[in-house]
Image (cartoon, rainbow, N blue to C red; front, side, top):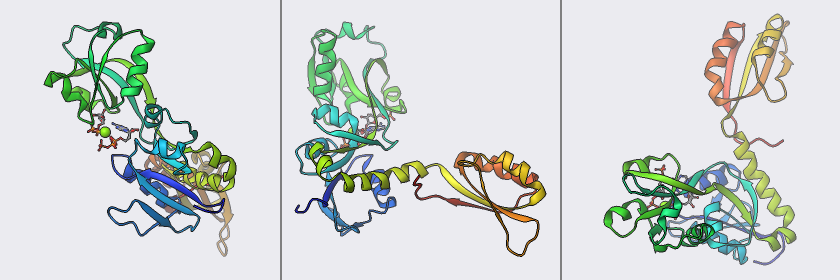
Length: 290
Ligand SMILES: Nc1ncnc2c1ncn2[C@@H]1O[C@H](COP(=O)(O)OP(=O)(O)OP(=O)(O)O)[C@@H](O)[C@H]1O
Ligand SMILES: O=P(O)(O)OC[C@H]1O[C@H](OP(=O)(O)OP(=O)(O)O)[C@H](O)[C@@H]1O
Ligand SMILES: [Mg+2]
């Protein structure tokens, strides 16, 4: 790509974080154009931003070697690849823990008991480094998925895999022996690009951050008689307090606006109605920019 303000953003083309990331990029205003089913690169509404679709595991390396200026993927992938990138923003999704797990009934009580064991994993590099810190020698069995099945297939004694809800481990009757690392989805950047294209990269990060910040928040508007205002203001946990405005041609009536957490809305409405608020409107917030 020519010109210092043009940037390429790498996002996952498949896997569980692919769609949420794509939705986030769209919501941030960076609308994708010409995205065919198997398209690898897409233009966006911003002529200076191009999107590259790649496997989550390849994104850290594409960002590190400059094929992309910034990328969005799991931190676990960054650690597995050992890529030298800058971590710019936690997108508050894809939270999981990489754990060592063994079959429930295995006579193993700690990581030390795994000396000489076979460990199945999609994360061979992280796993090797982890056991080395304990001075425990293991044989890595690399797999591409369905890791939890390997002990029952007789090809591994333990696994190193991601868990979030714990359902997969439970279903496969496995227990956690130790935690290896915590992961979440992050925006990462090439250090040189960050130096040379800082302004443009910050613009993209700010746009993505505004969507993350707005998540779970909504905007509530209502009319209130002026004498009921103190009570309504007491109830509303707005961002820096609610905004209060006179309603034209309605002497004694004010409009109150506030940002509130979505999970509070149900209870808030009951309380607000009781305090005399009326004409209540609740709206979703797409982006929040401080
Ligand atoms: N159970 C989970 N809970 C939360 N985040 C997860 C979980 N599993 C994976 N992730 C995150 O999603 C990223 C992509 O993993 P995923 O398994 O979806 O991709 P993939 O391996 O490319 O796809 P697939 O498993 O379909 O081949 C991981 O690097 C991790 O950061
Ligand atoms: O704690 P849980 O919520 O059950 O999630 C854990 C599962 O999620 C991931 O699997 P994924 O869906 O990526 O399938 P895969 O094993 O084929 O990679 C991970 O590898 C675990 O198997
Ligand atoms: Mg997977």
